[in-house]
Amino acid sequence: MPNFLETDRLALRPAGEADVDQLLRLDNDPEVMRFINGGRPITREAFLAESLPRFLHHYPCFGNRGVWVAEERTTGAFLGWFEFRPQTDDDPAVAELGYRLGRPAWGRGYATEGAHALILKGFTELGVDLVTANTMTVNARSRRVMEKAGLSYVRTFFDEWPEPIEGGELGDVEYVLTRADWLSRNATR
Image 1 (tube, one colour):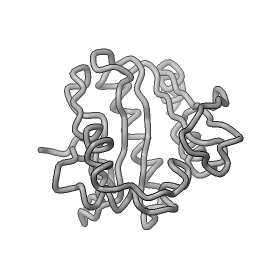
Image 2 (image 1 turned 30 degrees about the vertical axis):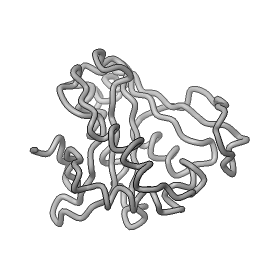
Image 3 (image 1 turned 135 degrees about the vertical axis):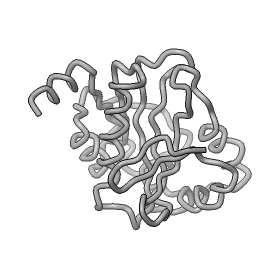
């Protein structure tokens, strides 16, 4: 399958069965998963049953998937993945932005670069009206990416999780960006 999206440094492409080992390694890095599940390991069976279907899911309103493998464009090195998926299969209005990158990709601007590109594609090609993103309140790095990508904090909320995660007592935060706000910010550029 062709790449879904390319930037100066990134190529986002659909995931396949051949990516399972790399995706599983990413999900078994305790530092990568610290704010997702407290850094607990996941089994291959659980990944295949719970995570892989999300990577392979097709959204008719986008005419594509909602989660893509991220590779370094010139070398093809695996970096992680990006998510930009509609809230429902048949309505592109609200899309959720997410990203999970391996430690070698941290601090290099890849998350912000991918987020900007997905937001641009969402607002200009996919019919998105609102982009939303969530993370734990204590996840300062991810919050900074959301802010750099143009999203604004709207609320803190508290969900019940099956197992406690350090910092979870401070809740999660939601950030959003509307098409109208994005258009007004980009009209001056």
